[in-house]
Length: 223
Image (cartoon, rainbow, N blue to C red; front, side):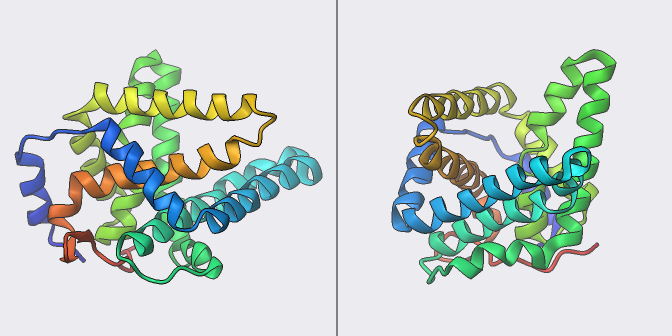
């Protein structure tokens, strides 16, 4: 596990977030294995659609207990590509190795975000953006859920408006993808996941390095 003191040092430095750099890096990661990334994105869509159709009122169970591990799979796959390691389709399902911690961090951050929206809306929007890196901190720094959420919140708060603009831009890009009969979404969807990972790596890489400036291999998180 990464020493939290080292991560605290990260929060003391000035933070610059380059939106264009994150988007370009996300696209570069996608181009290394486009068919694999698209295939896994189709798996996510298929599971979500299947749950909505067959489970109906219980579809939310999938969102709570399955979707977080699938999202983690995208980040873990991106990490392998960034480290120039071989990527197989099976690697996308490595998120299930972190099933419990990613569910907890996703569930708790989601609940706090919803409560913030119910309260005054603005606090919910703030938290929804600020917790964007919580799962990544669980995966790549081995942090327990609350510490991961706090590091994510403190880091993104330093660039909150710029990161908010980044997420809005990703939303608009995906809406454009939908306009092309939904086919464009098969590209913009995976690139969005990869761009968020690229942003995380860019902002934390100096403090989560193992070699050659790439983010650490995933750590088994503490529950």
